[in-house]
Picture (cartoon, each protein chain N blue to C red):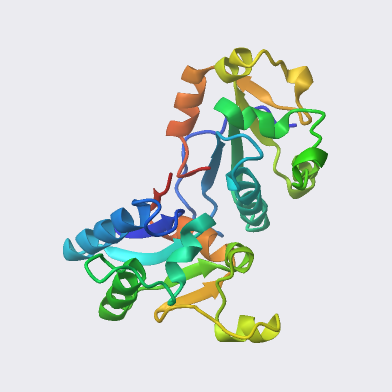
Amino acid sequence: MSTSMPSEPGEQQENAPAVKKFMYVNRRAPYGTIYALESLEVVLITAAFEQDVSLVFIDDGIYQIKKGQDTGGIGMKNFSPTFRALEGYDVEKLYVEKESLQARGLSEDDLIVPVQVLSREELREFMDQQEVILTF
Amino acid sequence: MKLGILVNEGPYQHQASDTAYQFTKAALAKGHEIFRIFFYNDGVNNGTRLGVPPQDDRNVTKLWSELAAEHDLDLVVCIAAAQRRGILDASEAKRHGKDSSNLAPGFRISGLGQLIEAGIQADRLVVFGD
C-alpha cells in the first residue's frame, strides 16, 4: 500500500479532469448508528469518480476495521469485509489515530486492513492538506 | 464563492437542517452561489412532503421548497439513503411497486455522484450534521 503523505493541494491543470483530496473521517462504532455504513458507501462512489481518497479512523471509528466482528446476535449485516475490498477500488490510504488505538488497547494486528498509524498531531497536519473533509 | 451544502440529519430531531437553511439563506443574501444542496443519512427525511408539524412551528421541508423555488436551488436527495427510509418520487414509487410517493416540491432524487460532484465543483463543501 502507499504510505506516502499527499503533497500540498496542487493547482488543476487546464482541461485536466478535476481531482480533489477527499478525506473521510470515521469516528463512530460500526453498529448502533448507520453513519459507518453510509460513510463507506460514499467512499466507494468517491473512488469511482477517481478522486484522491483518504480514510481516517479515530475514536470508536477504529472498531469499524477491527478483526473478528460477529453481528449474528444483533440482526445487523457485518459489512467489515467491504473494507478489505477497498484496495480493488484503489482506495489504499487508510490512517488510524495512534491515541485512539492505544486508548482502546488495540494494535495494528487487531485490524482487518493495513493502515498507517499517525499521531493526533500528524493527522492534524494531514487534514490541513485536504480539500473536502466528510466526517461520519 | 461557490458553495456546496451537505445536510446529514433529518428535520426536528436535530437542528442541523435548520442551521443549513439559515446558512444557505445568509450565503445567498451575501451574493454567494449555491452549487447544490445534498441530503444524506437521515437528511433525506427533509424531503418528505407528508410532514405535518404544529401550526405554530416552522415547516422545515416547506422552507427548503420555498427557498429552492425563489433561488432556483438544486435540492438533491440521495437515492440509496432515501430508499431505505421510504422517501420516494413518483417514478421510484412506481418502480418499486409502492402505492404512493412523498417527495416534496423542489427536491429531486439522484445518486451519491451528485455529492461528489458538488465536492469537486464547489469552492467549499459545508457539512451540517451531528
